[in-house]
Image 1 (cartoon, rainbow, N blue to C red):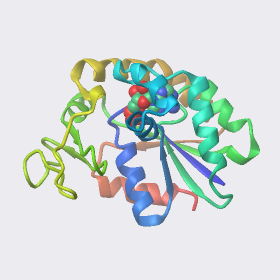
Image 2 (cartoon, rainbow, N blue to C red):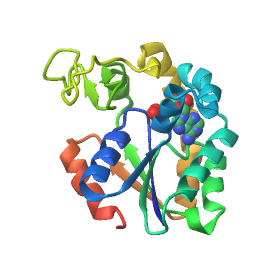
Image 3 (cartoon, helix red, strand yellow):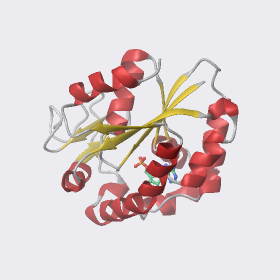
Amino acid sequence: MNITVFLGAPGSGKGTQAKQLAEKFGFVHLSTGDMLRAAIKQQLPVGIKAKTYMDQGNLVPDSVMIELIEETLASLNEGANIILDGFPRTVPQAQALDSKVRTRVSQAINFLVPEAILVPRLTGRRVCPNCGESFHLVFIPPKKKDACDKCFTALVQRNDDTEEVVRRRLEVFKAQNEGLVGYFSDHKKLINLNADKAVNTIQDELLKVLKQ
Ligand code: AMP
């Protein structure tokens, strides 16, 4: 099992890249945010536990997240090439992942973008509640106003993409990020990536460093 972690602020483009790499090159994209949102939709116990934290822009407790990711990784086959998007978000989560040989991280790619672009990127995001496709009012507008290009469902704003919650999410990110980056740097697994570039350019750079 080969695990690459994508580190970076909310809105730094980790999810966009991971999704495309999965579609085009067969990586297994695991987004803990997507997993939690699916669990909320299905009213599963983990979703019910997570919802209040998520709506406020806070982190879901480590114990809940570690159990969720361990269960998911255990269900994948040994040869899987995994991109973890949104996990780990704390040092205890990183340690939990590395504590078992099977789930030890190979590399952590740190998406670096200027802070000033994050708030407009997140507050302008609109998502399709049916197929999960993501748009942006300014940067990736849907072809037909307010409707998904793929399945024509009306687009919505995520509960945690409102300006107040976005600011809280960025605060939470800053509080955890230094420790997390330090952890992977100490373990000689950190790769810094300038992610303030076109999506395709970043993807080419990622393909050069990703262990396949
Ligand atoms: P994301 O879609 O990655 O921005 O995640 C949305 C929200 O899900 C976060 O603001 C947290 O509330 C929660 N979440 C996702 N992944 C984690 C994690 N690894 N640890 C704690 N909370 C998480």
